[in-house]
Structures are given as structure tokens and as C-alpha cells.
Image 1 (tube, rainbow, N blue to C red):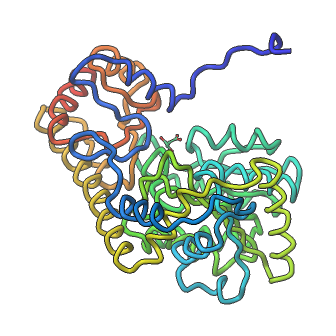
Image 2 (cartoon, rainbow, N blue to C red; image 1 turned 180 degrees about the horizontal axis):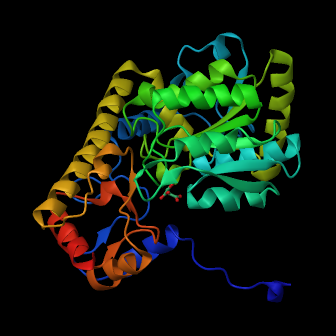
Length: 395
Ligand code: LMR
């Protein structure tokens, strides 16, 4: 049976990481996978997470099964973090399950959509996170794209985006990035969110919002603006979130999938289907990451510390944006890269050709995705000059 298979290429993001790890050049720079790194290039464990782990070690009493929804306390804390004091909570119209990471949340959402409508069409931004398309197709859904990033002008194709979304069918799903658009770093502003929410209301499509970077753009509440606005205005919506980046819990695989229904009765029916979807994929989510997040969010002191650590990560990434632009100028690069400072979150496209990306990798051991997506967190004061020099040489 295995003989029927053909080998597949390595994942465009994870394959790059494997290559980087094998590179022996001491000057190598990893701008590939979306992982936060500190000034020394290390992805350390947040202090608030360390404290929560100590607390769990001392207080956890059982490893017994927890059920397909995961920890109720985690689900409640995540719902509050995402929606704050929102009417969907007071109206009892939101249900959240913990999932194995943000990808697990998306796959649960995809299977849930398949249960609602087999073969449903999901519209994703052009471009979008490389894994979105494969993940939805693996659930038998049809994936189509709407215009989003203008590579030429380093801006949003907002008018084209609206025109495309006004044509989608009422029972289609539209995937939106809550903040820190991956891969472009180009986000909708508040006015644009209002217009997309109006469209969702008028056209009737179901919004599926992916929030993998809450807190990495402008702040926890600011980054949830579009999510909360959408939830206040549509009857049904799906929200996938991740604790990989903002809690630095990457390998613990913890995220959440929330569904909002139009009333309590339909939400309960939908929730029963969501639980059955989980049961058929992985039965129950891993517990450790959820336990850490709920411990942090249940403690005023740890929450405050988490806010400070998150702000430090966010600010460092923003500083790196400016640092790169300044260093490119200092290297005599005439092309205008100032758009990098106007974009948000972990990523931006450098806007160079695949051949130039290849040269950066082969000649300078600088790793970024073939589309020229850079993970800005991989820049530091010690490598930015070499990075800017190398970019200047391939331009
Ligand atoms: C990324 O886009 O680099 C991250 O979301 C990590 C991943 O799983 O691809």
C-alpha cells in the first residue's frame, strides 16, 4: 500500500528550520519560522510560565482524562481574553474548546465546517499562512482566495478585497486574520474592520477568524478589535486562537476554537457537534499548556507579569523593524523599505525575488521563506548589520 505514495516536498516553513539547524556558518540568521527570539537569538521560557509550571508541579493532583473540551477553566479564561466583557458571553452564545495549538483549532474548525456543509468554500486572503490551504483541503473543503496584499505598493488591496467578498455565497466561510497578518504583516485598520463587518452582515458569509498573535500587534485589546466587533454584529462566527506565541508555549500545543451561535439552543447543538469532531480526531486535547495558561490568567500577579513580558516581545519586534530599515539605509540601499515599520507582528515580506532569497541563503546563510517573508524577531542588534549588508549585496 505504501508503494502508492509519492514523496512530498518538505514544508516550506518547517523545512527551512531543519536546513538552518544544519548550517555551520557562525553568522547564520534564522528569519524563517514564526518563533520569538530574544536579543541573543534564544527562545526562552517566559518567567510567568516558569512560575505557573512550579505551581502546577506542586499542586496538580491527577492526570486523569479531562474530556474533549479540555479544561473548563482554560476555556473560560481564553473566552474572556479574546472577547472581554462581550455580549456573546452574557448572552451565553459562545462555546470554547481547548485544542492542540492554533493549527489544531483550525483543523477542528475545518471539520466542524465540513459537518455544517460538506465541501463548503473557505475564502482565504491572497496570500495567507502556507498551512491554511492544505489544512482546509484536508477536510474536503474548497479553498478560494480573495485579494489582500498589494506587493507592488506594500499596502492592502482593500477595494478589491471588498469587491471579492461582496460576491461570495451566503453559506461560504471567509477566513480573516485578527491581527499581525501572516505572512504580510499588513492588518486591517479599525475603519476597514467596520466595512468588512458590514459586508459579513449584508452578504451573510460566516467569518472564521484566526488569531494566532494576540498581543503581538498593538496590544491584547487592540488586537482583538476586529474579533469583538465582528462577534457583536453577526449571528454566527468561528474563532481560532493560539497560545504558542503570546505565552511562548509553542511545543506544548495549546490553542482554542470558539464558536458563536445565533441563540443558546443552536449554539448548544453546534457545540455537541464540535465535541464530536474533537472526539473523532484526537479525543481530548493535551492538558499541560492549558494548565499553565489558566494558572497565569487566574492570578493577578502572574497576569501582570505576563502582560509585561508580552509587551517586551512586542516592543522588541517593533524596534527590530526600525533597526532593519535604518541599517539598510546606512548600507546605502536606495530602495524604500519604510513600509516594514508600518506593518505589524512577527512578519513582513522583504519584497525581493525568490532568486535573491536563494542567494541570501546560499551565500550568506540567511534563511527566510521563498516568498521573502521574514520573521522579524530573528533580527538583533548584533546581526542586523550583516543582514543589511547581505541584503544590499543581493539587491
Ligand atoms: C509560522 O508561520 O512560521 C508559524 O505559524 C509556525 C508554523 O507552524 O508555520
